[in-house]
Image 1 (cartoon, rainbow, N blue to C red):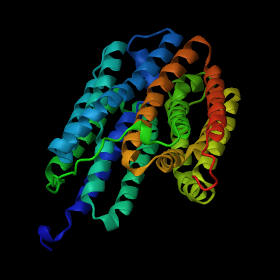
Image 2 (image 1 turned 30 degrees about the horizontal axis):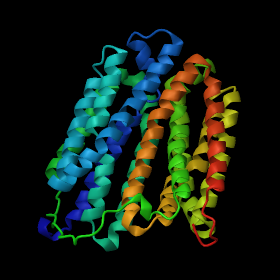
Image 3 (image 1 turned 90 degrees about the vertical axis):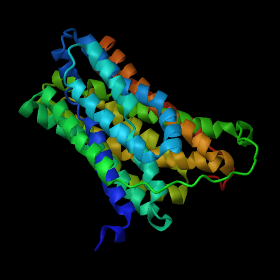
Image 4 (image 1 turned 90 degrees about the horizontal axis):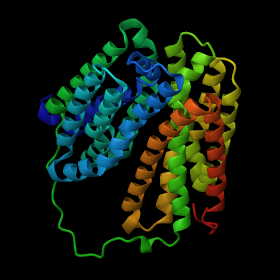
Length: 399
């Protein structure tokens, strides 16, 4: 069959899944050994190690939040493929440079660079959505989402296995090399159809005044922020916490503890989504946050690593599907003409949680104690569950 007879959207999907998977793996594989790398860079005080780990982890999300709107506008103007080429090449370079860091400051700066140059997963989602036939777009986006979730699952596991075998720095170099392969595939195989500039009729600009009730929307923004806060506040301290519990092999156990949350989310997302469609998104959001709080609190009292892995898995089961439920709740609370803008703010709220969570967890873990991080996270989740329930839309038919 000649190449022209093959629909390019299928090849695009395969390239985007590979590229999104590899970049997500690269962003998450350092989690199990991040405190060990900080210590290798010359930081010896235990409190400082935890704080630097939190700062280095949060740095990527901070710069990504600042630059995401810019890359989005440039993608609209110059094409999504160009943005994916930029993101894959930039990530390949940034990951390799992280392996050359000589101090904690350089590590944080290079993590900032990775967030500044990244964005492959979000860019590939937009490209697949716009380049796939409408009849197959839902399936294609589902395949891409599975690749992204698989990256979140595999990253910590790979990060737990590779450093003892090839060393921490070589792990970064290998990750950069794999992303460079994704860059080559994106450059050579991806084909973006020409975009047609649609002439838009003159219409009034969307405004917050179009939202009939802001309280439910703001409650969901808070839920999105605290969801990512809760998920990531514990990540920078897990390795140090497991070290206190004398769990061996250390990096592998840390990788299992981190991947357990992603695995739980993958397994629970479909049934939680179906349940939300049946009983209402707000009920599922509030109940999931409450159950997650109950799963986080005992993590402060575990005596071995396997108990932590089991409880992290339970937390993932509770949190799985929450982001789609939050997006659906926001979407049902605003009119069509402002939905995209409001959902954009919801994404910004998630980025805020991704930045504040590691910073707060690192600071609290270094100055108060590791177990205090779990207590704080559980309290915030419980509080947010109450707020989500209290500010739910009152009409019986509103989801």
